[in-house]
Image (cartoon, rainbow, N blue to C red; front, side):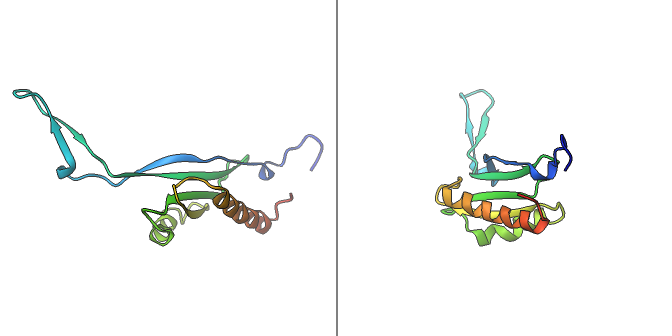
Length: 128
């Protein structure tokens, strides 16, 4: 690289963010509230779960790895791996499925992601 040139393929950032997955509702789960003689208002008691998404984003705009962390009390890695992989199969992003006790990043899940990311950098020949 020449002086003053920044190799954008060598700069990455990663941060975790919570996301909510809604499993929908049926008319039976909608409840009605209202005063007698007025229109009823319905509210829905949804079945939803929080997952943690940790994207690895490069300065050049690429997203080589996204870690999705599920709460292992409700879901297992085997249940979601195929569905998630199918969603992202054509985008060029490696999707990593992790499961933790609470569904958020732990030291062990972070280390797991860094090991996968290190393999990615090695395969791409990225200088470190």
